[in-house]
Image 1 (cartoon, rainbow, N blue to C red):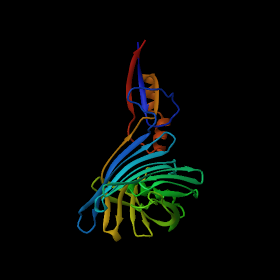
Image 2: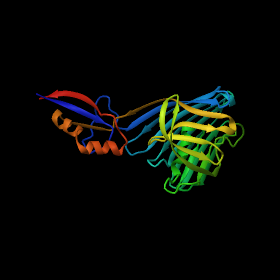
Image 3: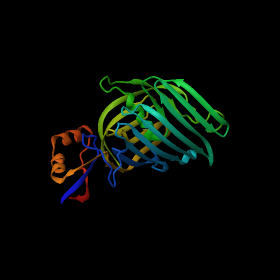
Length: 288
């Protein structure tokens, strides 16, 4: 009898795709983290945020995040899906304020049209608006806000203007959950190394025209720190967990799979995807 191994790995390389216990071909990798909101002046906590990012085989990403802003008695839950280049595809947002539901929005992007449906205590609101190729959502949980930098052209550098759709929740009234669009100017300051409770990270430092500093790391633009001196607020990553997850499942004799594990093809694919950890190997059933 020959023992068959099932290889389960994160990269979309050219091997047969099958199903096996513990495998999920919908997620290439995932990360989850927590952010503490606090006053710059005295370090007092003003809220928190918990988020999870799933990266899919086509390169798109889904972010699920909830933030709790204690100083304004607000809770926001956002699910946002973006394309491989971070251009928004769809957004779900549900907000609460002072113990009452503010509303829920569903927004979808169809080419250069944004379609929005908001349900609020005052009724339902629909909106259709033209959008440029480069635009971003600002739903206000900070990890979702951080993805606005996808429009920035690093090669050009300097201050750059981009279009943002901002869910500036009015908290009360019929306009809840529908936001305005406007231009926002951001500058890449450079690459730095900073330390926060979650660890030490190499980050890209961006500054907005409003004086906000954002420090992002990695291919998924994870927010490490967000400084807002005008509001006496800083937001720091306190925990981070990530995993290179399952995308491709291949079956074959152990010696063939071991050869594949050591191949230049796999090493190249790992490098292109920014993956450094070893793949998981699942042992399949014995076959004669």
